[in-house]
Length: 362
Image (tube, rainbow, N blue to C red; front, side, top):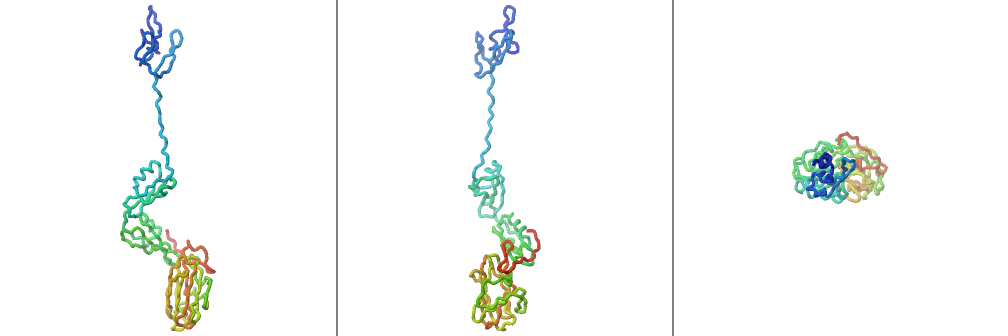
């Protein structure tokens, strides 16, 4: 008996080789055994049939055991949350453990805080907002020593302080000579510790509106106002306003500032032709709030610099304590000053002008 290639079993009978029905048993290498009638035993349950050729040309089938196909499991992509988680109070490592697997871009910035260093104190977007692929985390740090940023441009000073975690506030200081944007003072000063906020006094070129160019919206018990060149205490004012209150009366003049200006500056004096013993009282109000109330004596000059931020109506009350109605009060070059970003129109009939600027990088 021999097994030929292809699994054909031949048995020699009477000197001749012939195929037998036992080929089904011989074709399976993994079978455990065959019965006398040629039936296979121990064959795997799953099988495929393949044709087997015989010497007579007839075909038969052979059961061949094949393993089941290997299964391939594909993990679904991680589902993005619908809302932003709350990271405030945690650490950056904890936030990154959640966000990095979701391919979220993380930006970190420092802020001086009473919270332990490394604690997230703010996040943007905030918790509960729609989920975003970019998140800014503000992290608490211990307060460093305040550096000296005076004489720098505001832009450079702000960047230096912000990188250290300080909150920066700008206080505009009007100056018509220094370079616009120059930091002239800081609070707290350089070397201070335990600070979280720094206020910078920054030069800004003002938009200017002279009272002499404005039309008074009302006046009472006064002669004037008379705009033009005025002379007082030996000084000529090209943008002067002369106002003479009636004898034994309190005169008033009102102007519209339209809530556009920050400061009112100028000089008060009595006309050079006033009696030598004349004394006047001047009270300046912003929307009914007393801003200043100096006494002005003949031969003296009183500087005025008051805050008129958000003032709608400017009222100037004038009276003579001694002068018998013969002492014109001079508002010397009185002008309202504002920021270019806040003055959107001319005031009254006057014209707003901007002082020439020296360009600096901000």
